[in-house]
Image (tube, rainbow, N blue to C red):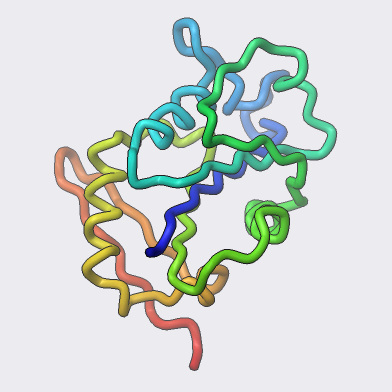
Length: 160
């Protein structure tokens, strides 16, 4: 049976916002954005593991009081770009089975809910011919939110 793994790239420095604290570590109430995002994925029962990919020099996690679920691993493997961070994380988490799925969601993107994640997983589970996991780095799936309507984006096959 296939497993579903989530990668949350969180290696950004926040340089575009001009803030000292990167977006993913900004607080909303008593939690950081990254804790909210991780919490959403951790409550989706179909998800087997979550990997949060941080920059190797990241100091916010070690200096803060962060709470993550038991299925979450913190990895210090972030690269110079989002793509490099995702690739590094794939190498860190190792070989999965051919029918495993990897979902990628940026740490600072708060417009996601458990309902959206569950709907997305149900959609890909009936349309697995769209994208083979071995092509994950060359393809992208996602949702675009348009008010209350969500639409699956079907990627083109990434080569033979």
